[in-house]
Amino acid sequence: MIHTLTYYLSEHPSIVNFRWSHTQSYGSTWSFLFTSISLYLLLSLSLHLLLSLLPRTKPVPLGPIPALHSLSMSLLSATIFAGTLLSSVAEIRDTRWLFTRRTKTTPFQWLLCFPLGTRPSGRVFFWSYAFYLSRFLHTFRTYFTILRRRDLSFFRLFNQSILILMSFLWLEFSQSFQVLAILLATSVYAVVYGYRFWTAIGLPGACFPFVVSCQILLLSCNIMCHVGVLLMHFLKGGCNGIGAWGLNSVLNAAILFLSLNFYVKMHLRKRGKKGGEFGAIKTAEIDVVRDKKDI
Image (tube, rainbow, N blue to C red):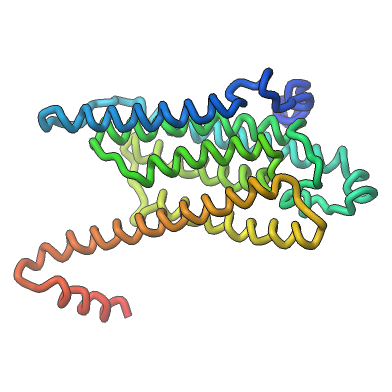
């Protein structure tokens, strides 16, 4: 069983011989990237505008579709995580002599910093390509949100579009750090979408904003790893795809800022709703009382 899984996740010829190519890999051109992101934005905004113009009615019933989507995304994320992990182990095993004799790079350093001249081919780039394609499946969450709540936020559109762009840059420029980024992201996605499936079928949820907390944790880990990449770049004489990495770092910081801003606003909104129960008591006075209780 384990041998079979290992073969299909890291040793299959399609995985070992993978090569990112504009002529052979679906969705690998810049025109496809910008067209697909533009269509996602256009469709989301059009759907939101259309529902806004209609008379106020109940949310569009979607049945079990969101729950099934969450379950499939959780399983897909777990598969990409397992494939990336096994492929990384296999790549380190097969090229250990290259690390030590030519670049003097340890396996951990390779996870942070690809040697200069690395090409987007082989096992780990196959799973990076799978992760890139899976980003388009994540966008269905936007449509579900619009249909059920008629709500559309700038953060959601920005986040989904930027994540598609970043995963494309990983492949296009053989960017360093992408292996760790995929492992971190897919592990969190597997848990988050599993949680969404859990709550979608009627089981109790967490007593705190679980999904937002996981997203902030993921982004915080990414930023810490980016610091490691920067150190490796200067200490080891350069990391492959450092230009794309720089753009990736800026975009990650922007997403983290927006996530924290969203988290704070949501927390303040909940506090405001609770404060409304006191009627005549001023909001400022309530905040003082609560602050004292928190202390």
